[in-house]
Length: 187
Image 1 (cartoon, rainbow, N blue to C red):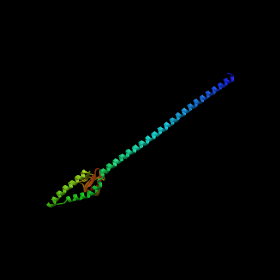
Image 2: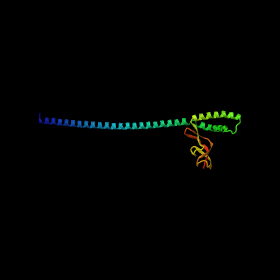
Image 3: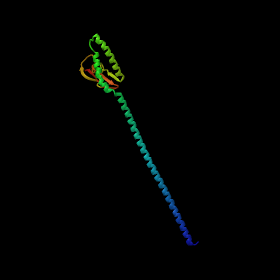
Image 4: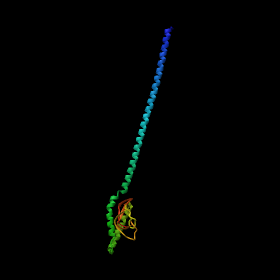
């Protein structure tokens, strides 16, 4: 082989080695770029997963709050569903009570009063069974949440701010006042 051929072959070999280096560098660059793309995609997917988790937890918390609120409203509606009926019934109870307080009844009226008293006791037992209770007022300290003062008096037999006389009974349904007692209070 002559010198020209040897040089040409060396030149070819050098060019091939350069091509291989370029191919190796390009392959490495492509692999690095692929890896970076994969990492970016993973990061993006992780962020998306975290967003979905956050949204899920928010919706779950909202549903739990709604569930609790609806249960509470349902319990309150059950607890107080009879309130309007009882409010309409209270004047009847008052009139019934007044009819039982007849002064000096005759023997015939006393017989009727015994029957009325039994009916009245039954009615009050049913109301009590359903959560209605009479508000105690006579001799109690005046409480504006339970009593409505319509009169005041000066009586030495009672302390200051004590109910002297109950003019109309008050009633509570469970823990809610449905009608305050009308009372006379000592000054």
